[in-house]
Image (cartoon, rainbow, N blue to C red; front, top):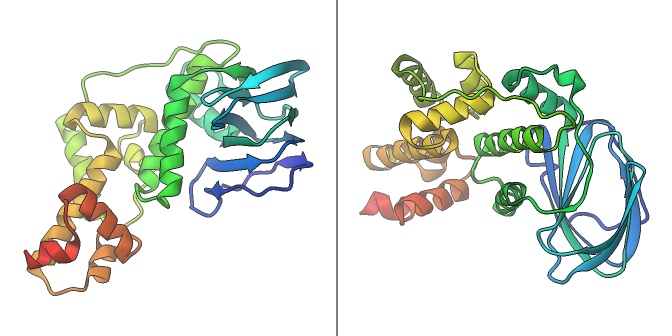
Length: 290
């Protein structure tokens, strides 16, 4: 994700983990551990969510939006800083947290596709120490994906980013927008169109935006209607189909496993092996020999 931003901090620690080079679009996820200290940041085009992962509460002094908070942050506590808003923090012990930066342009794009309010007028509210199980759940799924080197694929990350954006719009806007909700799942004609596209492009890096564009709808609504139609999320269905194609090639051809991995949309032998084992309980080699 490339976006103009400025950041000043006395803390020189680099993140333990970062999605900077993972190819994730519109969202950056980084895990930090800092010794006692202080820092400030100011991101021009990104909204920031910081989720505490500290095993012991950390006392923080925070200043943002002209307001000050001083108190303990424990595991699961989070703060939200809107784009363009300077943020300062000082902490008295080792701090461990996850930072999620999501572009304001992406939030506006999601808003434009899903709500009946002018997205240019949307303004996120700053939040100090608060709890939000929904954001925490999304954050931990993003962290798990980061630790596994993006094994779920871009479609999975895009789905999580869309869900997070919609939740921020629903819960943290100055004016609560009304989101249109569609029920009933995709009509059969549209579902077949999407399934055929997936089947014909398993070797490609399929994006959620590609699938939604086929039907001329938002990514959020597409994901919701797709799951209603077949009972599984788009990224789960894509992974299942890639594994099914790999199984066919393993049994019916003499192609190498690395070649099969690329033909099925996996980026390496190990990528295929991990996903194959997770879904079938055995390795590609074991499946071929069985």
